[in-house]
Structures are given as structure tokens and as C-alpha cells.
Length: 443
Image 1 (cartoon, rainbow, N blue to C red):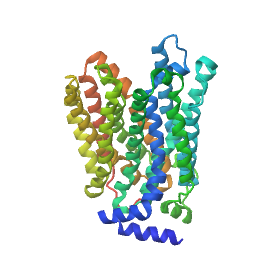
Image 2: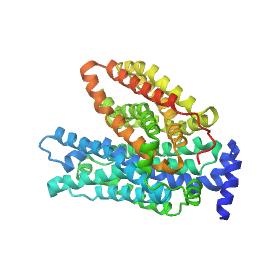
Image 3: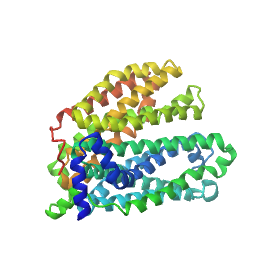
Image 4: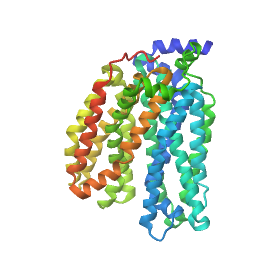
């Protein structure tokens, strides 16, 4: 009880940059940002490993008579994992709304830790045949399922625990930690490619990142066990406002909010998956070595990690609707010039494009989830945000690399640019249709 009173006092004082520093030192740094956001690091570390090591993973767990088919099978399993995210959002959302925000976060990190660790110990197709492919697929589906409650659950926990006038800043650490996980995966693959001989990578070293991530996940689980419930959820319990069926309530009473959250993901997921998921492959096709492409991406990810909290601060100061509107317009106006610059195949042009898209992506990531959380009713918040956000990312982000590849082959670079512009306009419609809620109340 005393601890809760202290947190309330600190939160009221955390309305300035000094307040932010004080709040981080006393409460947020140890308990909220670290304990909550570390799960996002693990989630996106696993995501990055899968993207970068897909050809190798395909050879290990699928028939290798045709390496291209094995890689294609690995990407299909990757896509299936993304499609499991909305189902995970429903299950963990139900758990987080009906029973406990904290318990949902604990189980999500346990499941993703187990699945990631087991990938590192799986037998290969060469030794176990079809069983290896089946087990790998099941673990990947389990990873996608758990991610459905992890990222959005972290953001909700941070938003409900943060000082009201700095909610965007603190919630943005969920997005920053995700990019940090992607960055660490990038550096891990570079380390593998540069330090360890190719024969060793093929034989056993490819397992090391997955095993290391699993061990780290166990440490994160320990920290999760020390998390306390958010004040918002405690108030719901005290007032007996816990929903019996959060998903049904959301679908019946708040369908427009679900559509808006999904619509809001159009621009951000498409932009990110095109320019940070697909780009290393594109650079490699243009003649750069994979380590060079990954190091360039690592540099830009580092920039974005620093920019996302600043974008969250700007959302606190100028309003999230204004920030997201400006981002959507910026993507729509700059999509065509960015794709045009990529055709020059020069290092400077590619760096310029990635720098521009890093700024735009940071503006989106620093404000999207906070806006979605503020526009969701407290009793169904975990379900609404997790389900709609993950459904949008699976539908628009998961298909983005494939759609862009097809469009570029059939129609040239103008078509992917037009597709990205269309996604930005859909998000703009969602942004402008949202009610103008108070930035200081989410109860």
C-alpha cells in the first residue's frame, strides 16, 4: 500500500524533464521499463534471427534437394507465425483483461522463451526427417502466438503505469526495445558471419543465438515475477468492472475502435517491413555483402532507437493525432522519391532513404500504441489493442515484403511506392476519425 502511494506521488511530479529523470531513477527504470520492455527485446531478436538466417534455417529443417524451396518453406513458416499473432492477442488479451495484466505478461514471456530455446536444440531434417520440420513449425507458431500478447501487453503496462503527462514517452520504450532486439539480432548475425567459419555455422554455431536468447528469456521471466499490477487494473477490480468476455464486448460495443487500431497499423507495419525487413536482402542483391548490409541497417536502427522516445515526448507535447497525421502525410509524400533514390544503387542514396524512413518510422512507433491505448476502454483494453494491432500487422506488415517483390517485378518501383502511399492514406483516415481524447486520463 505504501509503495502504491509513493508511486502516485512520483507520477504527479514527473511532469518535466527533471520529473522524468526522477521517475526513472526511483521507479520506472528498475521495475517498469526494464522488467516490461526486455520481453520485446527477446521477441524481436528472435524475429531478426529468423529473417536473416532463413536460408540456413530452411536447409536445416526442410528437404534440401532444392535450397530455394527450403528457404521458401522457411518463409512460409515465418508468415504462419505472424498469422498466429492475432490469436495470441485474443487469448492473452482475455487473460490480461479478465485476470491480470501481469500474469498475461509472465505467461507470454515464458512461452516465447521456451519456444526460442527449443529451436536451438531441435534435431535437423537430416537426422530426424519430417519430425524436425513439424517440430520447428509448431515452435514457430508458438512463438507467433506468444508475441500476440507480448508487445502490446508491454505497451499497455507501461502506459497504465506511467505519469499521465509523460505517457507517450514511457510507452515508447516498448517500441524502442523492439528495435533494440532487432539490432542485437543484426549484430549477432554479423558476428556469426565474420568471426565463426562457415563450416562451423553450418554444423552447430547457428544454434548459439537461439540458445542464448532462451537463457536470457529465463532471466527476463525472473524479473517479470517481481512486477506489480497496474493502478488502472487495480481500480477495475476494486470497482467490479472486470469484463466477463472482453472480445465479445469489444466486437459488439467498440467495433469502430478495432477497425481504427488495425487501420493505424497500415503505414507503420508496411514501412518497417519493407525498409528494415526486406532491405538487407535488397542491398545484397545490389552487390553489397551481407555483413555490410547488416552493419548499415544496424547504424540506422541505432538512430531509430534514440528517436522513438523523442517522438513519444513530442506526442505528449503536441498531441498524438498531430504527430501521426504528420507522419502519414510524410510517408505519402516521400514514398515515391525514396523508391526512386533506391534505383541509383549508390551507397549515399540508400543511406539517405534509410535515414528518412528511420525518422518517419520513429514518429509512427513513438505514438501509435499510445494513441490506440488511450482510445480503448480500460476493461477491454488488452483484448482490443492486442487483437486489432496484431491483426493489422499480420495482414499488412507480414505480407509487405512479398507484395513489394511482386509489384516491383511486374510494374517497377512506382508500384511499391504507390502501395505504400495507399497504406499511409488508410492510416490517415483512421487517425482523423478518432475522437480527441484527453492525454492525461486512460482509466
